[in-house]
Length: 596
Image (cartoon, rainbow, N blue to C red; front, side):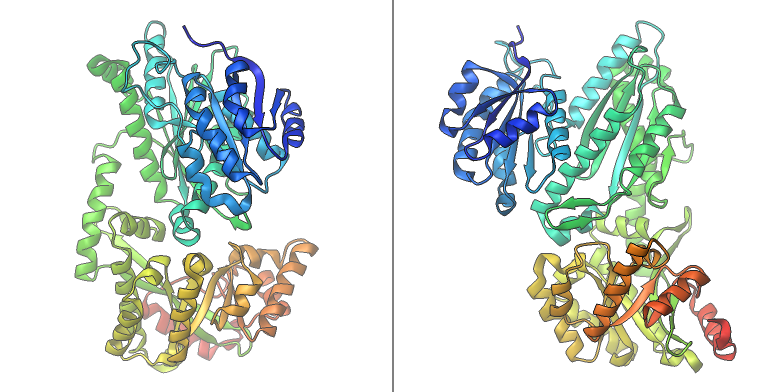
C-alpha cells in the first residue's frame, strides 16, 4: 500500500531562517513544520512525514547538505519531493544537493513568487508516480519519475504517462493526446559562457516558468483535461495534454509558452535572454494505425517522435516559431537533420557556404565605413537555411570551429580583393565561445589573414560577452594580443547579457555594438532612452566607438544620431548582400551620400 503522506504540510529544516521560510510556506496555504536543528531532520521526518521537505542550507551549507543526505532516501521512498535552498556563494554545490536527493534547488537571491512556485512544483510532482520503490516486489528498473535538476517529470515517465492515458482512452472514444515539444534557444551559448552551475540554474528557472504558464492555462478539468510537464533533454521540455484538447487550444498554449521567454531570466547577477521554438503533435495523426500495430505504448513513442520532428522543423524558423507535425512523404525531419550534418561536412569542404555582407554606416561622415560578414547556406534540397539552423547543425556535428574558420577565411579573401570605394571598408568577423576556447584560434586567424592578403587595420573581430565570461583572463590575453597586432575588437550584442561596466573598462575592446533591444530603447519610454543614452555616453568616455544594430527606420536612425552613436547597422541602411551587390551598393552610396 502507498505510504500515507500529509497532504498539506511542509517540513522545513532551517538552522538560520526557519521563521522566514515558514512564513513563505504559510503564504501559499500550506502548513509549515519547523525544524531548526539539521541533525534532527531524519528523526523529525520519520515522526511527521510530509509530501515536501525544504532544506534551507543558506548560511549552513555543511549541516544542510548533511540533512539532505540523511533525508534523501526516506523522502524518495515515500514518493515525496525535497527542495534545497542555497546561498549565492554556494551555487557550485547544486550538484551535491541533487546527489543528496534534492528534486529541486533554488539559489538566493529569489523572491517569494519564485519560492512559492518551486514549492508548488514540488507538491504537484510529489507522489505522482506509483510507488514501485516502496513495494516489496519493486522493479529495480522502475522508471525515474523526476528530473533531478528541475524536479519536472522525466522523458521516460512522460512516455509512460501518455501510454497510460491512451490505454484508458482506447476503451472509449479515443480522444486525442496533444504533445508540445519546447526547444530552448541560445542555451548552448549560456552553458559555454557562464559555466554548468549557472546553466543548471537557468534550466531550473525555465522549468519553473513553464510550470507557472501550464498551471495558469484554463484547461477544462470538468471535461477531464490533464497535463504533464517534463524535461526531455538538456534544453528541451515537453507538455502532454489529454482530455480531448483540440489543435486550436494546443496552439494557444504553445503561444503562451513561447511568450514566456520574452521576459529575461534573472539568475544570480546575470540577465539571461532565451527564446523558444515549439513542435506540436497529436495522436490524431495516424494514431489508429499506430495503435493497431503497437498498442498505446508504441503510440506514445510515435507521438514523442513526431513532436520532436515538428520541433526540428520549428528550429529552422525565427524565435517563437510553432510547427504542427504533418506527415512528410519526403522523409522524417529527424532523418533530414542527420543528413544535414553530413551535408554540412561536404559543403564546407566544397566551399558551398556563402558569405554575405551587411553594410555599416558612419554617422560622422555619412559614408559606408565597414561591413559585417554573415553566413548563408543555400541547401540544394531545403533552400536557404537560417543562420541559427546552420550554426546549430555545426554545433551538433562538432563542426563549429571548422565552420568559423571557413567563414572568416572566405570573408577576408573576398574583402582583400575589393576595389573602388569598397577597398577601404573595414571587415567585421564573428568569434564564438568555441573559437576563444580553441588554442589554435589566434594562429589560424593570422594565417588566414596573411593568405588572403588583408591588412590588419581593416579587420575587426566581434565577440559577445557570453563568449568570454567563463574565462575572462584568458579572453583578455587573447584579445589584447589581437589588438597589439593592429586588429580591432568589438563587443557585440551589448545589452543582452550581464553587460558589466567594470568589464567594459577591463576588456581590450575598441567598439561597442548595441543590441537591437537597446536600439529600440532609444525610441521607447523616457526611462529607456535615459538608460541607453547614458550607456552611449559612458562608452564614449571610455574611448570606445558605438555602433547601433537593428536600425530599421528613419526614427531610429535619428535617435541613434542624437544619442551620439558613431555608426549604425540594420535594414534602414541595407540588408546583408553578396559581393556583387555590395560593390554596386557602395558605388551608388558614394555618388548619393545624401541617402543616409
